[in-house]
Image (cartoon, rainbow, N blue to C red; front, side, top):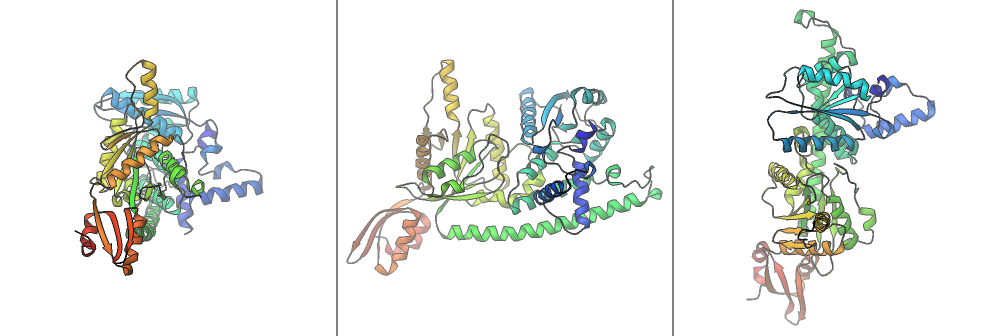
Length: 492
């Protein structure tokens, strides 16, 4: 177990120690850069000093096992079970094997150890039997609770927030995503500096009295200042990146091409929808523009924007960003706000829903709340019930009435994102939604205003074009703003 604890993928205290040591050298590198350097040194030395393994890649670690702990303080049995099932999926997402699950019901959490003392002893007894090296709690723990539990259990303890942060750290690919995750991690770390004395060699006295303040407390204050300084640096870097993102967004908005954003609960199939729309309606190099598609929570974090050009219909820009989840850490929501706000500037939202998941209604509620939090709650939505083919199969096997797939009904559409017929129906639904506030108008433009015609054609809103001696006569679907701007050319 000692070796497992050393190479634990979720060795939070060691991550903190690593971050602080790098801050002290005034050269804060990302985890990916650090990992590459570490592997190169490993090859050169042909040996590993286990004491310096601060943040081991989970793919390189075998048989890391965790005990999951959940406390029900008044939720319904179904809600509590759903939350624990989600914790299992989060644990698997970072390649940790679930050894056992321990649950308890209390009116209120224990202030010292979150769960009752009897359950703590039960977990302690199970550690050696189950060969587990990590304890993962399904709720947020206070720094004091983590310290008390680790002291009693003598093993790694991490809460739901810390687990999600580690998943995000592993998935972050772009520079912006890495900076966002680093900022969230440091904010999570800051209140947990106290109590890291054993790992960081900061024992400044045992009584805790002010008169006994020693080098440990002084070092903690220095570390706190360094971390606060680094958070400030990250904030400034992210603000600059946000300016770049705003510039790119404004450029897209000036092109007047419709913007459609994929949103929804994590692992609902957003990336599958994007990749298959690219396959059918993307450019010749669409294969190079696909995003990671995997049956896993938070498989993708980075925002991607792709142009979709369906034949005979208007083109549009399709964006995909990080998925939502219940109890998403506030630090992450704050850090990823600029990325999540990509949806706020869309003309239409495609809310992708895993229709085969019994909890899909709950996922829709979480998505609605998150969209409202980032200011995107008033944007028109098309509810895309993905994986409807799985529901269809279940209905056939149980002898029930079988639904039609694909099927569109108002703002709802039931599809299988991997089937071409479903994607065609989805494109038609997007076209209908985009044209809801449009009106067909006839315009007569002088030949000197050919740029207006080109702009309309790029937007895919021109229905007919005629070249006459008096000018260019077109029929186009115009929005209210267009009608006001080009009223002089509109033919009664």
